[in-house]
Each structure stands twice: as C-alpha cells, then as structure tokens.
Length: 351
Ligand SMILES: C[S@@+](CC[C@H](N)C(=O)[O-])C[C@H]1O[C@@H](n2cnc3c(N)ncnc32)[C@H](O)[C@@H]1O
Ligand code: SF4
Image (tube, rainbow, N blue to C red; front, side):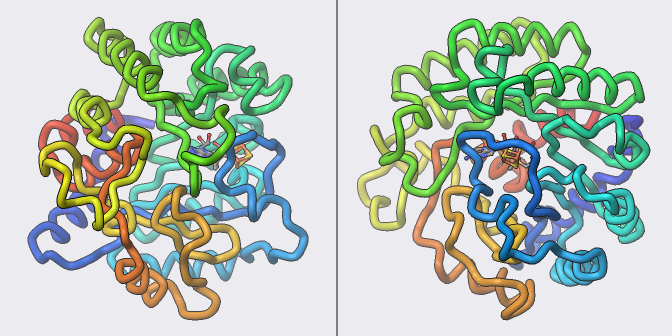
C-alpha cells in the first residue's frame, strides 16, 4: 500500500472534517464499524464483550452492511474504521472493503492478526492497517490469550512482506504495562520499520473496575514520560506530544471523565473537548450506535430508528465533556483539526 494512495484516499476524510468545522454541522466524520460479532479470542478487557459470539444476536448480512454503509455515507461520513469482533473472520470482508472503496471512503481496519495470510488480498486494498499486540509475549498473552503473541507476530510479518503499511496498536492497562513490555514494543516496531501507538483501556465505569484495568496517576504519568522520551529519540511512536501533554495535565485526580457539571471548577486549557459522539461514533455488531467505548450500552439501534436518527439522538444524551484516555484525546485532536496533532497524524498514520 503506497503512502501516496493512502494520502489520496484520505482527502475525503479531511474534506469532511473541514466541512464540519466550517458549517458547524454535526457530521459523523469517522465511524468505527463492528462488522461482525464473531471473535476467536477472549481478550480480558474487550469492550465488545457483550456482543461477541452471542448466539441470539443475528450477524449482519452483506446486504444489510451495504445498506448501513449507504446510510452512514448519506449522513456525511467518509472515513470508516472496520472492527469487530474479528473482522477477518468474515468470508465476505473483501466485498465489504470493495463496497466502501466504491463509495470513495477512507478505510482503516483493526485486526487481531490471526487471519492476515488468509485475507491478504483484501488487506492490500485498505488505507491503514492496525494490528493489536499488547507488548512482549508475557504481557500480550496475559491480555490476549496464551499463544497469541506468536500468531500476531506471524501476521505482522506477512502484512509487511506484502507491502502493507502496518501500525501496532497496544492497549494500555496494568496488565499490559509490565516493565520491559514497552521496551520490547518500541524496539520491535523500530526494527520492523512499522509504527506504534498505545490507547488506554476504556470501559463503562472503569474507575470502579478490577485494578488490572486502570493505571494509577503516577503509573500513567511515568509511562507517558517514557513514551515521549522514546519518541524524541526517534522511535516510531505515532501518538502526538500534544495529546500526551493533555494526559499529563489532566485536572481531575482519580477520575477519567469530565462531566458538564464539573466544568465550573476546571481550567479551560487543562483538557481538549472530546470529539467522540460529536464527529465520530461506533456501530456495534448488534446495530447499537455508541459515542465511544466508555459509553458502551448507551445508544439507539439502527434496526429500530436507522443510522441518522441514532446518530442525531446521541448528542442530546451526552453529559460529558472530555476523557483522559490518550487514544480518545488523539482522535479528538486530529478530528478537531488541532494543527500540531493533525500534522503529526498525517505524517505518522498516512505517510
Ligand atoms: C475490539 S477490537 C476489534 C478488532 C480486533 N478483534 C482486534 O482485537 O484488533 C479493536 C481494538 O480495541 C482494543 N480494545 C478492546 N477493548 C478495549 C478497551 N476496553 N479499551 C481500549 N481498547 C480496547 C483492542 O485491543 C483492539 O486493538
Ligand atoms: S480479538 Fe479484538 S474483538 Fe476479540 S476479544 Fe480481543 S479485543 Fe475483543
């Protein structure tokens, strides 16, 4: 996959963002689409757990997916991130990609890496491929299942051998942050000529969950300090310094979300307004439309009201202003057209 092709395909996503900024219209510029409920793994932190392999939930047919893509397109979206479950389990994944391509959309995918060889021809048609890997073998297998490390590494190698531009996507939580795990990932990505980003674990009610999920304030800060230092040394970390700075100056100790009711006590420059739910959303494998992983379970269903109404209803329900998770801040900065993050995003995700 050449950078030029990715840049060319990305122009519509950028136009969408500019159009949203200029007109002030609320457009779902980027949609995270769970195209399947099926998954071969049981990662301990998975936000999609409520739909994975659930017998009672019908799987989208190809025609239903095409119809949903049409609805999403008609609402102004030009940028789709294909997820699941594991999207490469679908035998028709290439047709789904072809359909998105026929509409001229920018197409990302996140995969667990197991079926890369089997689906390599489809993957060559993407604009960006993220492969989930949570550190060295010990750390990764603790989060994603025994033996998964070797399969993911095999998948990454196959994608690279086929000229696909790959990013390793790691989920940061206590279980995956074990000391040498980060050192392994930055060195591995550098050696392989691929990029790396971390996004923090996000689940509803995360502050009250098992301590395995959430880093303490000190642990998070020390992790991000190391993250910035390695980026400054030239390691291929894609997260922008501006996003890391916002995590570092997060104003609410022990809380990962700022709600509208908290605003009176918080300096305006200490957070970046979240864009999830404002210009992005998730469509889950059961058709529910959610703003983000922390508001999983709070949304309307496309089967009941259609995508446009589900998207429009979302804003009325949003009681939050910003979240502390790095991935959320990064996506908000890029889609909010914050200049430094946007340049960093284009340089690192696209070129
Ligand atoms: C839900 S998975 C779907 C795609 C594919 N099955 C995979 O694992 O890459 C998409 C990404 O979200 C990450 N993820 C899962 N649960 C998460 C959570 N609670 N918070 C943050 N990221 C999470 C996964 O590690 C993966 O990188
Ligand atoms: S592979 Fe992806 S969808 Fe499957 S359990 Fe892990 S994070 Fe969830």
